[in-house]
Image (cartoon, rainbow, N blue to C red; front, side, top):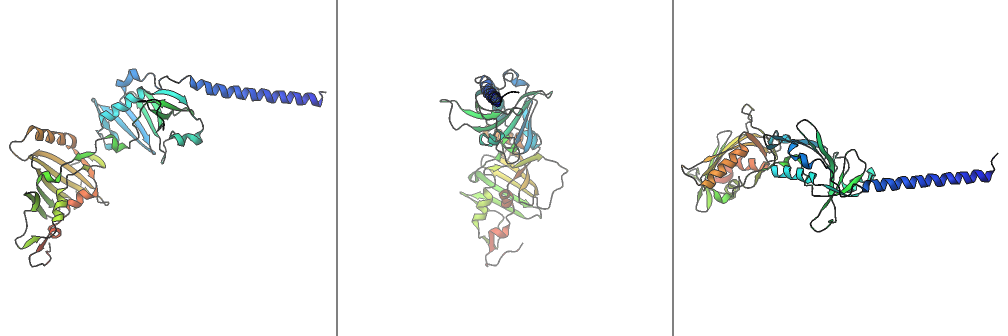
Length: 351
């Protein structure tokens, strides 16, 4: 029967062996990832950039797709509205040029520090998947935050993790991917300074009309009743800013057969360059935002080439679409004569 001392020696030897094995295993786990340093994250993507037709993005628990059709990128989250090709092309090129620098944590509890956790609701990470028309996956990663320190002058790092890999990485490259669905499309509808507008005519759903025309440097009320005077010029000035920095929050195909609520407005705006913009507000939502259609045309028989190009750009971007605009757009069209004028006898005009 083995002596007690021998048993202790064997136990100690076994403990040392286990410790050595564990240390070696951890060393291997550390060394193995380092062999990726300097190599491309997606080595086959550079030669297959032209084959990318679908980009799936998951961010903050929301999933959307950018899809290429006929050489143009469409934002499927916005019913196929054009995506900004420069943003999409830059993303694909950046992913193709992404290279490993150094291995980082494998602990899920630390992923959030690098923003490489799964992109569930509330997470700061973004997952991106590139696919071909046949559904072949060319690249897939979770993109995290930009490194606080530059790798070298002119070189930037970003934290990433491949979805099926516990290991996170610092990679060299720039990934401009932290965009919500609507930000992948050009949101500006039109931006025309109030000082360029020469006429604005509004008809509300009940037939109420307001007509503004420029006189000198200011817009004036051209359908001013004979027994009234302008009391609130600021309301006219507010209406005149209708087309300044107009950006949409959503977009959908303009359906002719979609029912129009009683809160609809029609408007025409003419600028000093001869541009006429016809505006149809089809629906005002409960939150005050408005679904609006635009059509541009020439207000004069002869206009400059620049003005014609502006008309063509507007119609190319907006024809066939209805855009959702913030509350202030509909608020400007909702102003009535009673908000602007008063009777010369100081009696409140009733409509």
